Length: 464
Image (cartoon, rainbow, N blue to C red; front, side):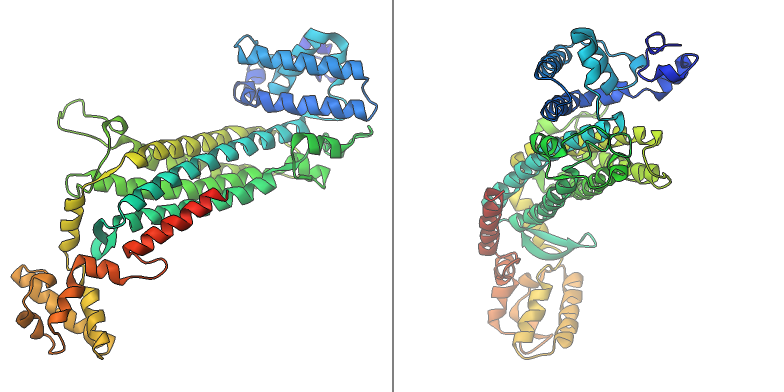
């Protein structure tokens, strides 16, 4: 049976059409059609190269480019008829091109295969997605810097084991997320370098006999390098796995951030207020204001982790070169990129609108003996060994628990019952401001160090 009768580009080999269910089961057009813009970009570039290599005439090249440009317009206008029997985005566009310009459209595929075509499309698509994601990371970091600068002197409790540990600046706390996002940005920039290598020209698996000039397509498509092995070029997806690994780390950071926002907005903490536009209510409890955006981001991290594990599992058993298994690479990759981009966008919109409840946070920092370490450090400066100081302060805290007094609320006489090295200068270090200001070094929580960190952060973003 002919290719025309089977509606398949490869039908000449077969004596009967593909079963209707199998055609639907094996088709990818329902999800890979989102690659249309990058597929057309690659095809226009391929046609340009074929003309320069003497494979196409200038007239044929121009007809192909004009036809592809018109097809892109049809797709973006919602007037394109996507056909499952044509399997994928590549054959749908090629078939439509042939309908438009005739036999010249069939020449476009000279010197390439769908194997290197799809590998190229995915890399072009992912390169653009990474650029968008990097922009959202920067936007979120700008919001964090603005909040940190504004609230450098606002004091909150710092936690370990979710127990009050030491007082910190709210701005300092926010800058911890800035640092995490900076590493996420670095990882994605580095990942992009390996995404941006061109497989086009690998053809099915062994290269092609046509006199292609891969340097031309590499330059026109903006790739940084040409894939050095045709087998590897068509079959490997480590760039997609690497992206999902970087995306998983970024989503893990956003999930941790989300957990803090959920805690901080609860009645038990009441540290911050989220604007209503980022929350929802309850269908039965009229008082509720639920932090849905952070909760959803926390939950969506699992989707991206799943995409990473799915792609690793997909690839682990494949021999060289291309296998149909690789059709399963797109949906998890698409979902991971969509999820990370949208989660970052939500946070970038939300963080500048956070409102700290300054007095509530200060009162929380005042409780829990958060300046106990400062008292120990004070005694060390008086010449006592740290371990002895640790024990002395432990007894003082025990006394505070029994009397309901914080260290700063005790009288000098009360404090001196634990060490005669304590004098009236101790109260300068037992205040929240004294504790925070004392940590005056790079990376410390002192307000002037927070402002210095903000300045460094602004310089970092400006240099991107």
